[in-house]
Length: 153
Image (cartoon, rainbow, N blue to C red; front, side, top):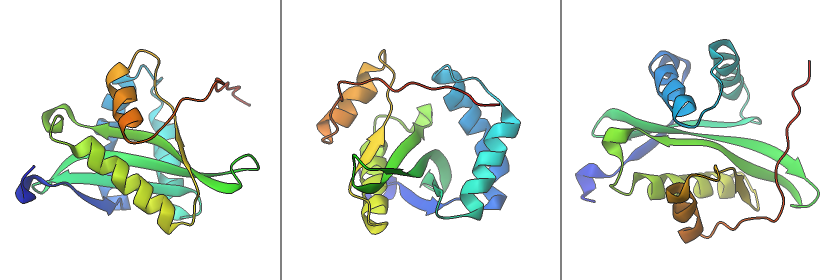
């Protein structure tokens, strides 16, 4: 990847939300995540309003939106306190294959280290071998447990 093709990362602002929503919708469709625009918009606004919640980061290349990253901050006794949850990392199809995903993971780790976090966790679909291999090469390992979810209210 030439210097000109290198991605840049910057915190999202409220003025980015309108352009980012269709990209997040595309990610949710690709990953078979139910789309609820009101819920997503409220979560994005909460990230922007309180840095203790986590970060919403834009990935840009050559001045255009190439993807985004969402890292939530969580707490666990098992992990010794606060940890990062890589909630979403999405690279638009036109920007894939050039190492942006790898650079985005480096940015996630840099951000978490700067926050004093000791680990990063993430979810990956069982049928997404490509992403799982990218994470594995970066040092992420599978845990012998499954996440479970119950929606409240």
